Length: 225
Ligand code: ADE
Image (tube, rainbow, N blue to C red):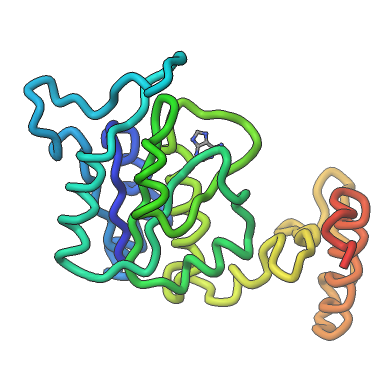
């Protein structure tokens, strides 16, 4: 998968791709991430990428031209499956969206700033708008990182254990059951006996039951269907 991220603050984005799972996905050749500084796509001597909004009102708006130049240059090189705009008024990111995006080959992620982008960018370039929750960040970069992390770990070969992403919370609309590791007893706190029984079918049904109970308690809304 190739991810092109358009931003005015590339420095905010780089280091998370230099560690852990996201770094591993890149070094394994499964993911390519490219950062594009929007200021490199303006002819203005002040590297201006935003301007006052028509009609008045507080806050600057990101101009259409630098974004057009950047996206058009990328589209000349290859086809993109999706051009995603990170914005608080987009559809709220969930596991189903992460699953869908993980199946794509080439995506562009545009990070908004200030009051957002000129509406014509959304009308003419953007194919999907994603929010990471009902709160306003100072820019789309942190949202883009969260989207990348949620998506990249689903790409086959990225996680060591192929099955582990499938048993995450929210896959099947269930929260994950509790997990334990050695020692089987610590300070008198015991691991549920079933997990050390070696009886795989019983362990599976115990996990399923625990997942339902946990979901019912914490997120009954997930079970409504
Ligand atoms: N940009 C600002 N706030 C955001 C949010 N909640 N989600 C995605 N992008 C954003």
